[in-house]
Length: 306
Image 1: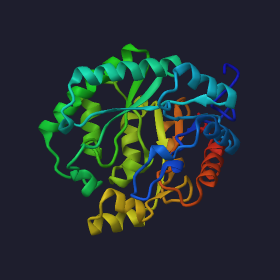
Image 2: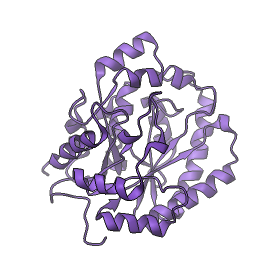
Image 3: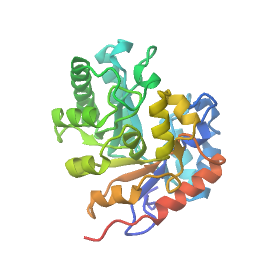
């Protein structure tokens, strides 16, 4: 895979897809059992025009077989995601650290240097799923506990040769701009980068451009999502849940929603050399066509001139 590149032009970005539009389920979430067989999945991603992809290693597949599938498809693996349990799950830190070490070592073995890190949604009662994007039930003590856990896990990932990047996500305890800033300001840049998601931050009403200006030097990877702001605003006003908002049509392919994604990327400046990864949680068209639209959009993006 040494001759392959995640760039399609010299002045473009490192681009990839996390092809979750294939996984969209009728309940407004994702169903990973809907994923096509790995070789077929990778072939389709190659056909739509992406040079790299993020796909979970299927159960029962060895890392070597996984790498071989990418080589057969002629595409590269891209930075994946590690989630730490929410405090309500009561998972011992030692167990999470072991899982982080495994995830980090796998990323490093794939030739990757970055990984998104986020907090999982709580396992049962989910106040920020029931009332998303508004920072429901904020608790400083809980956030401090999560930040402490996150810092420990980030160090474990770093020890395996990959740099973790904070990934705020609606429905979790790190959801809002306030949550994001508190976490990044507490855990220093030597331990934690920033891996924003244009859609989730915008859904939560963050000043995305302001966040990018504040933490530009720490942004190493990014999820490119688009949303419909009218759907967001109506859902928040009506108190709709996370899945209800998704089913109402929040998500859209890049360039089809209302976000100024190009302005966000411009804030990163000409020296940004990280990955941008397309995600469409719930497509507006069949998955393959959705991926084509996403690929065309990302392939045409250019870094700003110095």
